[in-house]
Length: 625
Image (cartoon, rainbow, N blue to C red; front, side, top):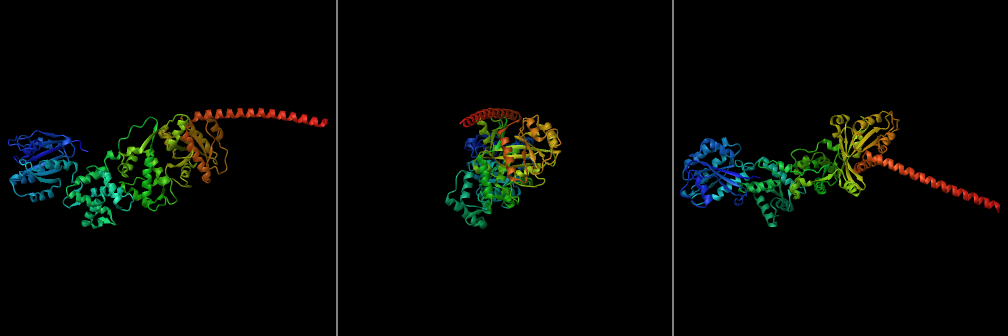
């Protein structure tokens, strides 16, 4: 929004520029007028648009061409004044002043043609202005006024403000009498966002909701009927089955502009984030976000997931629980480009036809928020998140949560609040890392695909998002420890390949051993006969020596095994047990087990001796009798 405006008055000498300014300020006609008025500043609270306004007078008698060009560079709008009683001054407007303004303005300058001294003429001369307006589209409007009688003085300066704050030029072509293409595209997108049931029309409830969003008040039932009646008269295809079509919606805005109410159209456009050049503003797309607390991660709020669920179900036209390609195309029609590439189909859960499920849809949004927060803000803006939900901005769609929780009960609460846990997957080439990722998505035998896989996994009866990221050893070498930022690490080896585990040992020592990242060893292809590893230490002994849990068996061919593995990985990541804690856990647990076993042994031996002694006594007694 504009912080201030500068209105520059130009025209031939003695047309009354200075008188117009003085009449506005003093509200009476000044008989004695200086050659040039000093710059006037009108406070925001006394202007209709609530914007501070500077009014600048130019006098060719006191100022030179250089000063004219300087003033033009600073002005936002020009009031080009001519004398209604002197036709030569209008000729100079067309032959001199309009070309000068056009040639020396740094940007297209809106112009208000002002015919002064209407008290000296009888009839209006507006017909003489129309050819000029057709030749110079930058002329927003024209007005006839009188500094002497104060006729239309306030209106003249209001039109000047309006020409800057609500310009006609980006919206409407006066030569063709039609909305410009960029305006049509923007309004059609807004129509699509407000079409909540996606039937291609706005029903009464949707129209009333649109009115409430843009103007903070719903439309009365009679007003709704009046609107549709007006549309039907000149645009029969604008109403169908009692509902407003996109053609009718565009016609209404064309009508607003032609009737001089283009501020109405601008109010709609700006509510949905559009700038004066009809592009979504950076402030709308990328709102300021609070500085994240130390050691914290960003995630979507529960309310955001509710909004996304509404978006999903609205576009799931056949109600089958999946978005097919046509439905995805409809959803992304409000985007300037396709935000999801083909990789998404190998990153999230889909059905066998490649249609995205609701959890796959949620998963992709969760992944985007984790990897690229600015892009997430942009995507939510395209969906109209803040406007449709009444939020200040997309910044309210996210929350921060600490990555290093406290111990005890608060640690458990933290684990339940976090929505996503990340795990890097490393291992030798050909061990099945990609298959491991695809198995999380309940798929088998998928070649290539994304380096990410994300799906929901149950952690202590709570659904969490587990994000697996396949990392190549070359990437580790290039990125160093930064490539290992995650909640847990999965180190894969092939049980059927005797050479597989040695490379895992090398990867562990080189990249994992000196970090605090908890690590799990995954025994992949566990349905195959296990080979003794050609390694100085076997997998189970290696895990014991490093304080790592025993290898987890994993097989693509056993669904239960796969689900159990991912639940274990997610729980492992959620509880953040690093190597040192596992060392203590192993030693303490085995010590207690050993001590408990020894005690049981002593008790058992004592019971045995007592039982044996009583048995011998009983035998002796019986023999005696």
